[in-house]
Each structure stands twice: as C-alpha cells, then as structure tokens.
Length: 354
Image (cartoon, rainbow, N blue to C red; front, side, top):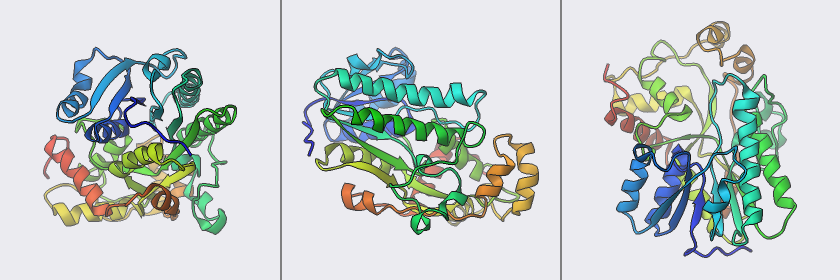
C-alpha cells in the first residue's frame, strides 16, 4: 500500500508531449503542483499551452531542463516529489538508426529517471508509460496467446531492430524498469500499457504518429481505399486519468492495459463519415491486402511486406478489465474520440474541406 501526499509536487517527464500535456492539464485542474521536464525551459512558444492551462487552474507548474540521455538531469526536478510519472520516450515509425534513435533513448531514459528516483528519498511511486507494444509485436502474435487476446501477463517476443523497432524499444524499456524496481524497496512501480492513443491534445499543432494518422484519414490519403489495419484505440483523456489513478490508488500494482476498443482504420473512417459527411476527403473503401503488400513498401518504406502480412486483416483483441476494475477507468465511445480529434484538426486548419 503506497499513499501519496497530494500536496507534494508531482514530476511529469516529457512535459511538452501529447500524453504528458493532458496528464498535466488534469493534474493542474485538481490543484496539484507539477514539475515538468522539458528540453528547453526558455522556449516560451513550446510552453505556451501549458502556461495557459496553469493560469486558468488552481494548480501550479514549474519547468526543469532535462534530456533522456542525461544521467544527472532528473534529480533536480524530482526533489520533494513522492510521485513520478515518466511519459518521455521516442515514438516514430521513421528513423534512420533504430538502435540509436529508439532503443537507446527509451532504455537509457528509463534507467536515468529510475536512478534519480533511487537518489531521491521522497519518491514513493513511479508510474511508467509503457505500451501494448511491450505485450505484442504483430496482430498475428495474438491468436497464439492464452485466450487469444492481450493480457498483462504476456510480453512481446517477436519484435526486433529490423521489424518493429519501436515495439522493441518499449519492451526493453519496460523490462529495464521492472528490473530496477526489483532491486530496491522504497518506491514501487506501476505501468500503463496503452494501445494507439487518439483524441484531442492540449496543443492542436502537436506532431506525432497519432495526429499524423488522423490527418491521413481526412486529407485524401485514404480516399481511394483504406488498408485494413486492425488496432486497439484508447482516448488520451482516459490514458491520462489512468496515470493519475495509478499514482494515487494505494494498492495499484503491476501492468495495466489501456485499450477502449478493438477496431481498425476502416471503422474509424466510417465513424468520421457519419459525423462529417462528404465535406472532407475521408477515407472509404477497403484496399485488398495483396495490393497493400505489393505497393505499400513503395509508398511508405516503413510499411514492410512482413508488417502487412502479419497485421492487415488480422484481429486485434485486448483484455482491459484490470484497468476498469483496479483504476476505475471508464472508456468513452470510439465515435467521441475520433470526432473530437478530427474536429480539433479542422479547427486548427490542419484538415481542409474537400
């Protein structure tokens, strides 16, 4: 049982990130003091949205300069904190060197944050943003799992630097976290393992894979056919709330799958067409898997034929019951998530009418 003092500051790493921004927003609304690590505290433009949230909330925010690869960066930010929420990790499907650009910063960043926790007597709990990617590599893995679905007991064993490097980075980073947590007894570790996170962030100009996918669904990229990728989706607002619940629930423990819906690109585009009609170039139709396998790598080098073979048209199924029972997560309808996110992109001018 770990009881966190709500009046102590709370460290959130990667403060300008998509998920971190929503976590910070919710913490500020609850009146907490947030210590946010960012690459450049002097960059007022990058911090504008966080500053605006803080000004309108009962909470407070302080910024600390930190880089994942800097072993000494997190100790000043952690001073006085009992709860650490570590969200910072590289997320990109297009990198020049997967080991250098994904695996090393993810693992070293986790190691550096937890080393700072070891050096900070006040820390009682660390909540780590992991991923469903640390549980499985490809949809084809899921059928061979117990009960044919993702559970917290399963680990990804199929990803590599050559295939699914991002998933490998999340797997190795989470395994490192559990190893380090087991080497001491002052603080405990809780992990959140979300599927694909969608929904409106605090900054409509946010860049990243989630915003890129939503943009492609409405800018004509999929107008001539949608690849039948089957995925799990969860709203960023639920994921943020789950991190906070994991921090303040005394008996929280272990891993928690955060995935509201077993769905796919075709269903999401269908929901967008229901809400926005024909006013935007929203994807429609289904691309044959053979065509995606043949031409996909020519259009997008990250879309390998192995990825197509092991994922397109193959069901994604995840068990989210632990997050509901232990963290009190209530998943909103998928239509609300995708329409809210799409509307934010329209209002920001990132998706134009047809």
